Length: 334
Image (tube, rainbow, N blue to C red; front, side):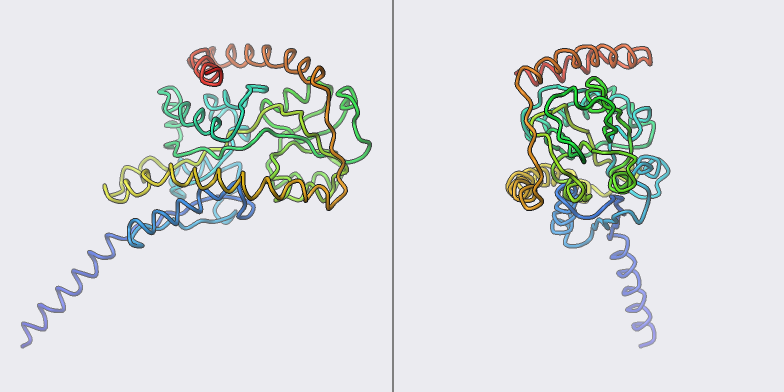
């Protein structure tokens, strides 16, 4: 009897260890709060759990694991397995993907933004670039064109931005500087405090971020058609962690990306954008629309020189910058 009980106990313990070994938990570093910008990650976690019967879970943290500007560093040392970051937060750490942040690229919608990003993420130079951080690019966080909310006098011409202190990163900052504004780069969580203190008088964001980070609570006006570009904010995974997954768990993760992105785009277009207009109206925020000629003149004076400077700077680093730029603009022109 003792032998039988011992065998049964040993089997139970062995089974328990096996079950535990099958379980997989990843920590995911985001920031702010749950919003349109993070819905694909939330959906991904849901899908992965469903497909693996709860054996593989993504534990999402909003700011509890790292500063948003240090998420790529955290990925590199394996502090967590998945994270979201924005290329413009540290252009020197991910120069290849900043091609997607060049001003006035002419991206038409979230679907095209997604297609462009996924193509760039698979380019060998980009894979090599992110490998320096032990990171594998998983999916983008596609956003519409940025526009500016501001405090004070409403601009009636682009020249009214002369000397205007504004939060604007990457290529958007280049575009704002071209009209005389004084762009400063800061993370999204720093923007509202900077507006409150008067360090900046405006901020360039996509609509969801203007709502999520409270910039519209301070705003008097919003530009409807400046459309200087957008910011590229990938979701990445630690490469070692990805390679360490079982085939079933890796398939569940990678096989859920397309559905998670489709959910994200639907949410952004049919939830966030429907709320944006009423949110402006409720707060009495004036809409500012510049003439087509003024926007065309700005685009022609900014886009070409910015692209040339980006290609020259990155080619000097040994990056096939012209190839990346040609691929992106070629896809947009299709």
